[in-house]
Amino acid sequence: GSDLKFSAAFYSSWGRMNPEASMSWLAAQAPDQVSDKAKSAILEGAVQRDPKRALELVDQFKTGTDKTEIVSYALNVLAAKDSAQAMEVARTLPEGEMRAAAFDQVALKLAATNIEEAKKILLEMPANSASTAGGAIVAELAKTDPQAAADWASSLPSGAIKDSTIAA
Image (cartoon, rainbow, N blue to C red; front, side, top):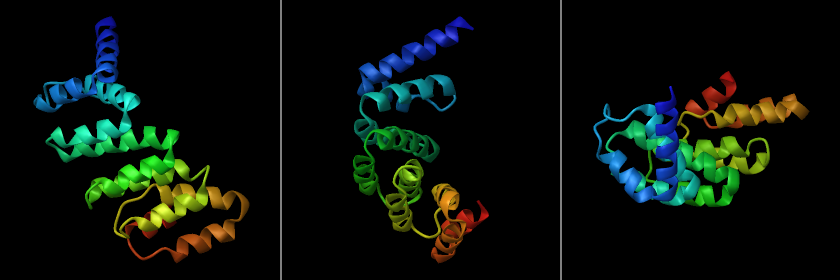
C-alpha cells in the first residue's frame, strides 16, 4: 500500500538526485533482491536527470535484459527531447541486440513527427533485427497514401525488419 508508493517515490528521487550511487547500488544487488517497481523507479529517476549518463552507467549491470530495458527507456526519454542526440548516443553502443533496440526506439519515436528520418534510422539497423518502428512508419504512411506504405514496406531488405513491418 502506502509503503510501496513511498519506496517508489524514494527510489525515483534517489535516481534523479544521484544517478551514480543509485545505479551502482542497483547493479550490485542480486536480481531477486530489488522489486521491479523499485528498479524502474531508480532507472526512471536517473534517466530523467541525465539520459546519456544513465546509458554510460548501464555497463555495471550483469544481465542483458536489464541493460536492454535501461537502454530502451533512456533512449525513449532522450528521443522525446532530442532525437539527434539520441541517435548520437545509439551509434556509440556496441553492435548487437542492444544497439538495434536503441535504433528501433528512436525510429519509433520519430515515426509520427519525422517519418523520413525514422525511415533512414530503420535502414541503419541490421536487416535481421526485430523492429516495432517499421509498423509505426507504415501506419503513418498509410494515413495519407496506403500504396506508398505498401511499396516502402516491400522495398525493405529481406529479414526480420521487413517481416515485422509487413506483419504490422
